[in-house]
Length: 395
Image (cartoon, rainbow, N blue to C red):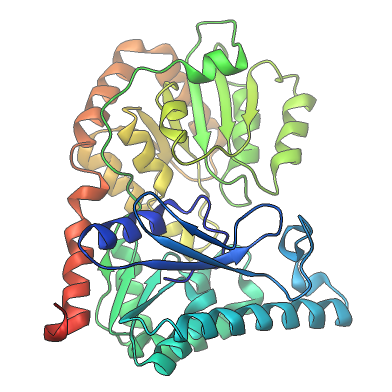
């Protein structure tokens, strides 16, 4: 497998790797190395191997171009050339290390590693699996690369022996856009977890009032309705609003909370380890997903955090988008609100904050749905795909 991240908090890739490893496949994940932060090689307790490649030939500890806050289209000529050269070197090294591994399958996670994975597969006579986590041609922040991404997927997706995506709407999109068989759908569900009693957020933040906790967990990024959510907190009294995660909007969100005098009710917890996250989630009372309809990728999402709320037994307030609506309505998990509508979002949150009986009813429905909306319920689809991709020679 190949990812364009450091593989420290990639829950989806980890679950896929664990499923394949548990069925007798030998899985190695190729990822990015940050000097002073990650190890170059690692073996997880599940026996999954990790090989990390530096982001550039001259990478320095904790000084990464991608974390500088400057997008490539905002750089000068030499800055762009330097960034491009660094990335080409990294892709070249990833390709070389994967090709010499002589794997049976090269599994590309998202389009930014698809060409590298395809070349490694060609060089080593391996099969190719493409796992499209997003619709990158219609993704927040990808406008300048839309044509390039479309050309890459149009050229290489039909050459993959297996394709995967995350929602039915996205599967339909890829099939229509590139004339391929509809990819199998593996939703971003967590593993099943028994409902746990937790007081972690209240204890860690020393919250003084017994008010319900409204939780958002995930990246603090544009297009997710987070600045609106902080402002909406002013309209929902007697509730705490907790954000777990990091990202470019962190400082902005804190500034809005201070501007509105909400520091005591709007609190922030930095990104936590995957193993620790369920205990934080379970200590909340309401899960909120206010994603905005800013792009096709958002319109077709159902979001990993929605399923994480379900596994923790939380009622939800979420944007009324097709895939999210299907999950929420099918299991009666909570309230849907039009994306971008502050007043309706505030009203829905007030309803669940003030109506204990309704909140408890949705929570019970969420706990029941957790038995269905989990990773284990769909992992056989991944195994079936690999059986087909590998063909009769496997085993």
